[in-house]
Amino acid sequence: MAKTTQPDFISVDDVVALLDGDVFLLDVREPDEVASWKIPGSYNIPLGELAERLGEIPGARPVVTVCAKGARALHASELLAQHGMSSRVLEDGMSAWGRAYDEVDIDFPGAVVTQIRRRGKGCLSYVIGSGSRAVVIDPSSDVERYLRVAERHGFTITHVFDTHLHADHLSGARDLAGRTGATLVLNPADPFTYEFSPITDGLRVEISDALHLVVSAVTAPGHTEGSTVYRLGDVALFTGDTLFLESVGRPDLADHAEAFAHSLYRSLHEVVLPLDDDLLVFPAHYGDAVEVHGGEPVTRSLGDLRRDLPALALSEDEFVAWAVARVSDRPPNYREIVKFNAGHSSLDLTALHDLELGPNRCAIAS
Image (cartoon, rainbow, N blue to C red; front, side):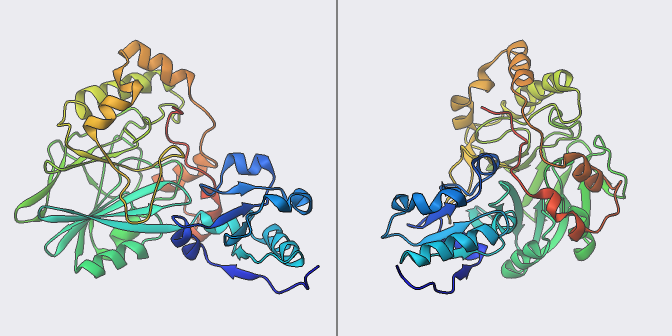
């Protein structure tokens, strides 16, 4: 038996960089914890079973041990070392995974869109810039990331948008607007309590002399009453939680599932689906069914979604019955998160971060 060695730690940013490679992520939490929330591609062997299941660990691949906050993963790495197997420990475990990000630039004629992906939450946000100006859609609470993107491109952020009142993660829209002096633009159909510039029908926000971000509908209600879809010229559609790449937004978080499902159907069929098939759809979230790779944007064309998502082919009554029947567990701590995002809670952001841990659950399970 090999002598015990001091385990190595690895940061979550370095783990994200390895996800497209040949890394073996060994999750030593209990199966129910893993079933609720995991890093895509991870392999579960509970810590208590690890000594008897060492043969399941491939010897030729780098191993990273994972648990909730690092303690069990550290024990697992020590056990592996005792048996001559090297590994690294994900520092702060799944708590760190909840704050894991990467980003990718998408070039359009006259504009660049930076998709900022919160890999541990499946949250997507966007910096859309042209010339010297940019707007931001659905920023997370880590506003420094948006400031760095703007600095990298030489952009001044002039407007900040949220597509809706978020229930699964803390919005950074207020903070980012305050830090930059940008105009905060929100839909008053959602119950925000602080000052903002209300969306008006047909609002056009100039990014450059030849480029406008167009609010294609004042409301696309269904996920929330104030859900809004934004369009960038004839190339991109930012759908918030109205339309995802694998499903549609859930209608039940305001406790009016049937009424909101009718609204969601009409928003999809009257606001979104009449648009051109070639528009690229950029949602606010993605779920486990969507593969995410470094350097590749999370997007599909509207035509592809029209063809591939069965829910979009249902009649209104069929859609409502399907949507109401398939609502599942709600996002963890969503009521407290909504209170903060709406302005009803004055708790410090750092005191709220643990409320975000866990998966996003804003889509109807497909």
